[in-house]
Length: 168
Image (cartoon, rainbow, N blue to C red; front, side, top):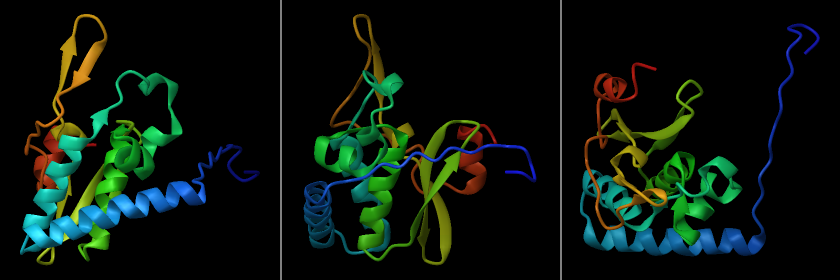
């Protein structure tokens, strides 16, 4: 910018038509299952949260390589691996498909992403990544405990999530 003397970079990621079809197929299947099993929007928010955490492995092995699929819904829903951005984007598109308002929240300081969900006119914070338990191992750094999930960062008030996200 000639006004601020600062430069910005934009990184574009794209999906092929096959990638989009795979995302939509998985999203539709999960939305149908959620609607069949859940009555209320709150139940749906819980179900999708738990399903994602139990079926996505946090990609600790490749996190330093910044693989594009780890940062999007394709990695989360189709490949089954993601980092925070992939978890948050998958949660958001599925909840929006279910008619539940959901938006992505990000922090540059924390280098982290999570969601804000509207239920009964109130906004709540949801961090699927921080509810996915990852345990250290001696040989490979850390591993995701697939099939296990926490609810410490599910439907939190802003005040509560700020304590977890260090008031950022």
